[in-house]
Image (cartoon, rainbow, N blue to C red):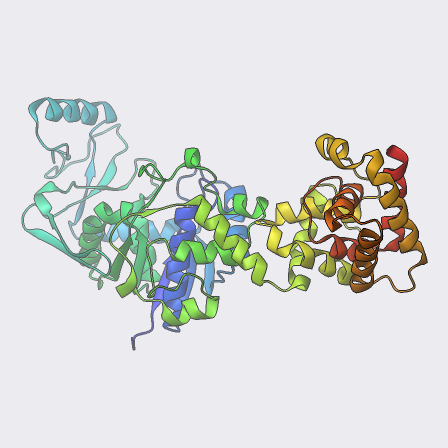
Length: 469
């Protein structure tokens, strides 16, 4: 595309950044980056009752965590009320908008009557031809929609969509308190910000013909539209909290990697051959709307968890060591701000990488490496820390004490020589040792565990296990 592409992500700060919003932001970002265009962040905060600064910060935090940087913004609509008033005045002056004095009670009564008679619920047009103001009433401003003909939208995802104008309301563009409404602000902002492509969820599709008419009434070129299919839960209902976490930062809290969530979100509605796992560079290179499907996408938490594990497996130990620290603090394995031996932590993480689906799981598993003391699982203790294991553990402890080099290979040699000398299978020594060192029966390879834990801590734990038998 040769034109200078400009797109925007325009969330309402009435809640945290959720999965659907994050995917919309991601598709906008990828489209901009693929075409070397501009990505604008705009905060649509005209709903003053529900919009909060906390939610604005949470949206920005979610965007940053996902790696979706913006080129302009964030722009807040509440800073632009004078601009919207100017556009409303222009439409009134040109006869393309009018004052409406109908009360909410009157409108509700008309709506109920229309429902009873099976008529369209659109505004009756009572104030359309009004010449004089009605004293004592603060009016709203309505946009004068055409009453015949059709409005067309050539959507980059949905294709050619036709709306009959007779079905469309004279929408309110300014409330009685002087504040603008969504359909006006979105058009004015997109005009002022020179937005070329509007990429958003298909729950906005019904607003599009009204907005197209506003563009035309203001004398501006209409941008291209792409309405993304909805994200559904496993029961095919719209994704909501009952399907699990919907907030992006909830996935951070659960120990997901941002790359995994980005990869999963982009695959909800977009594909590139049979490829499942993409780097950010590949996504930027391959992204286009030709490969965005029309059908709603189903959110599958198990698939996301699998993908997260793949990213953990592929991540360098040093990176994971950095990423796991906040979770070690949260799980109270280490104190907040406590200095860590990052080289040692990376080595410990390396033993758990293929066993951890999330960073929370990894932090919990690191506890037995880091804690001074461990709790034994009752079942594991009863089964493996028995009299018959005592002699084997004593031999192991003595062998480790006299070992000249405490390395994984030497540790393995010691285990095997004790098992051979005592004429027992390796597991007869390995499992009691595992319970003694980790408290349970599940861990990485026992030789790796000892190597990471170090001689001193290993011997202390073996002594405690021997004393407990």
